[in-house]
Amino acid sequence: MPSLLAGLPALGAAVLLLGAASTDRPRVHPNQDPVAPDSFLVRFETTRGPFTIKARRAWSPHGVDRLYHLARIGFHNGAVFYRVGRTMSYPGGMVVQFGYADDAAANRAWATKGIPDEPVRTPHRRGTVMFARGGPNTRSVELAIDLTPNSGLDTVHYQGVVGFPPLAEVVDGWSALDSLHRRHGNAPMEHMDSIMAGGRQWLDRKFPGLDRILRVSIPTEWPSGRPPRGQP
Image 1 (spheres, rainbow, N blue to C red):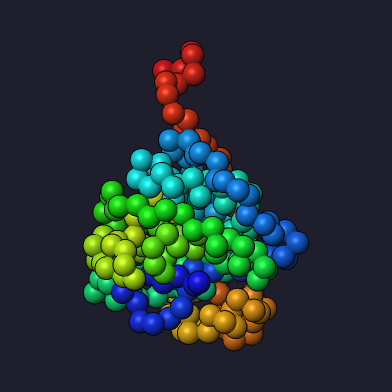
Image 2 (tube, rainbow, N blue to C red):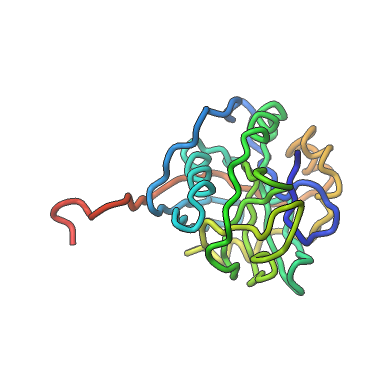
C-alpha cells in the first residue's frame, strides 16, 4: 500500500525510487535487515551534485537498519526526486521525496516488508531524513528530507500513527538539494498508479526535467563500542 507523508493533500505514495534499469534492482527482499552501525554516512551522487546524510541508529533503530540495508545494495541508484513541494503539516514547510523502483514486482515485495513503528526521538529540522508511511508498520523504502524545519511532523496524527521518526540528517551538499527541480511541486503524486507502472519513462514524458540519484554509497561507518586499538 503506498504511503503518505502526513499532512499533505490526498496524494498517494510519499516517495519513489525510479529510474535505473530494473535488472540493477534487488527483486526480492531478504528475510531480515542487517543491524546497522551506531552511525554511518550515506553519499548520494545526483544530477545536481552530491549530498551526504549521517544516519544515527539511536534515533530510529529499525529505520536506520533498513536505510543501511538499502544503501548497501544500492537500492536508490537511479531514484527520481519526483516531488519537491509543500507539506500541510507545517505552514511554509517543504520536503523532497523519492523511493520506489521502476520494477513493479520489487516494489510489491518491499512494500510487504514494513518495519515496526517507533517514536519520534529527535525533532524535525532542516535536513532531517525520514521514512514515509501510510499507517502502522508501513515504513519500507520511501524516504523524505525536510527542506525546512517541519516541526509539525513531530506530532502529526495520521492513519493511527503519530509523527514521522527522523533517522538521519544532511551534513553536506545543500547546494544540490536546494537546486533540485521543483517546478512540478506535488503534482506527480496525483498519478501514483502511472508512476508505479511506467517509472522514470512515464515521469520523463509527463513531468520532464525531474532530477535523480545517480549512485548511492556508504563512505564511512562508526561501529558500536570503543575505537580500534591505536586510535584516539
